[in-house]
Amino acid sequence: MGGAATSVATPAAEARSGLSLLTTMQWFYGPTWGNTLQICPERAALSRRKPCVKWVNVHARQLELLEVLRRNVLHAAVSDLHLLVAEAPPVEALLSRLRWYEKRKHMLHVVGIAERPSFRTYLAYASRHLVGRTVVFLNQDVYLMPEGRWAELATSGLPARHTYFLSRYHRRTDYDVRRSAEAASSLGLLNLTDAGAPADGGQLQGRRLQ
Image (cartoon, rainbow, N blue to C red; front, side):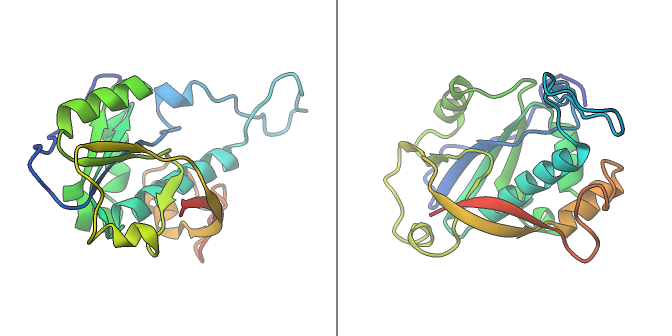
């Protein structure tokens, strides 16, 4: 999980139907984001002056982001998704253990940039690699609903050569993160009990964009 940028193949700018999603995913087990976490001590009394986070919440958040990624990749209106991350190799290692990724890895481009992405990063990437496409920029915890207006875009589409920055409008929903938790456990990142995702299926709350 080093800091060097990963060289990846990026799609050409040929005409293509469907949306190109551009987003990120925090990877809490690497140095870029992991070093920002203040983990709560297991037994010591907590100090209100030093906010901290429990490992169970870190694991749950990582699984939530993986599920959001899965739903966006599988959306009928999406032709490709570009995931800008600080450390690409560990993210790809986890994805390679998920069955949905094996079927759709041709449309998911994991791009290591060795830092936290900013709006400048996204705009520069879209301007270089997604020229002529219909680009939708999403927050990392927002996914497109599989039914309704977004599903219609699979046939009707949005104008090409435009980039859309989506604001958040959502209602709560549940995630089944069992398979993602099992994949993370197989890499030693967590155990199923600590992740709050037992073998019979854990549920997390998430957001979906309508």
